[in-house]
Amino acid sequence: MALRHVTRLLCAAAMSIALTAGAKAEDKVVKIGAILPMSGGTASIGAHAKAALEVAMDIINNAHPELGNLPLAKNAGLAGLGGAKVEIVFADNQGSPATGQNQALRLITEDKVAAVLGAYQSGITLTSSAIAEKYGIPYLTPESVAANLTERGFKWFFRTTPIAPDFVRIYDEFLSDMKAAGAKTDSIALVHDNTEYGTSVANTIATGFKDKGRSGVIDVAYAVNATDVQAQVLQLKEKKPDVVLMISYTSDAILFAKTMQSQDYKPPLLLADDAGYSDPSFIKAVGKLSQGVFNRSSWAVGPAGSPSAIIAGMYKKKSGEEMDDTVGRQMQGFFVLVDAIDRAGSTDPAKIQAALKATDLKTEQLIMGYKGVKFDEKGQNILASAYIIQLQDGENYVSVWPKANAEKSPVLPYKAW
Image 1 (tube, rainbow, N blue to C red):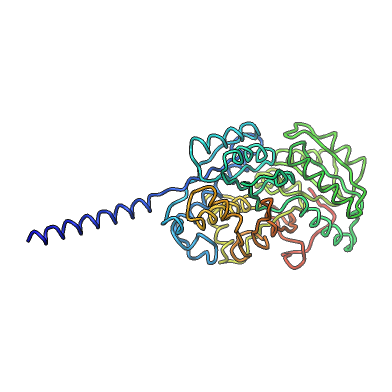
Image 2: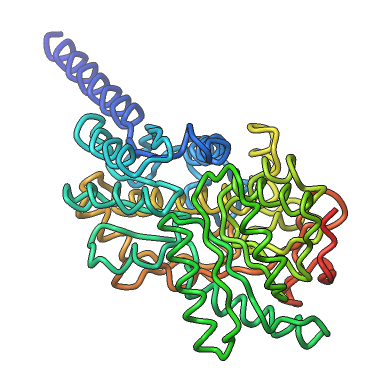
């Protein structure tokens, strides 16, 4: 009798331990910091990015077998960490490199995040990632493209997006095809702000174009968050370039569109370097004034029922907006980072770093139009790629180049309004 009593007690204790262990595994949370512009001139981008990351968090924390080969979607939580859930700790960089740096410090030292995602603007990614490097915390940027970010010898920094040297090749091939189709593309004006993003990308493109024999490059710089760009538009009217390539954040892109209309200036071909031109706020504000603008993108919704189309529907339900390249890159970068944490089976920074270095994702495992994700020794995704889209027939971008990926043919000259 006593033996049976002891046996029952032991069984009850074992069951209690098992339940407790299960609860602990289920309740475990992996914190990831996300530094975004939640206020300031690019606050609309921050709001859209936050919504995209919340959708991604839902996909990871709950089972979504309908998303096929997408890593992390099949199971609820991180299988590599016993079903642990992911929690994003959002931080507002306020459009300031100094604030972004302080937020990175807070996320790492106070919130104890396992990794950091950030920070949209290249200048803020530059400062905030330096803090992560100092503390030995993995930092991934899904969208900051300044070339120097991966030239600092950092060991904890990773980037999934295509960058300026990739853009040189893409723009050169696109403009060559447009020239073959009858458009003039000899003289090119690079219009850019004075931020890390604007100056870095403009310099890389100018140098790359020169190396490819495109010597007629005109530099048109302006102060970020400008209140008046009439001088720059008048300069464009005077120089009459065949192509105007815009490297601008949202508020500046809107101001340029309105100023071009007021000055009655339409370049024969207007090409945008993503950024503000992909923001739904730009399309709502001045889409009707910018019909025919070309833009760089790695995002396409895809056919109905595809993982990208399903996720686009989830994002629209969450935000009320269509998914665009910027939020798609944010989401893709987050998936890559969390996939590495899952494969590491740990929140130990060194193990996450090793897993990121070992990343080798294929096209069918991505929502973006990259050829895959694989990092070089500098932390750059060597399989990142992009194509050209155009604002046609209202307020929707369609893929127009290269021909193999095109939904419609490119339309020239630039229609504007």
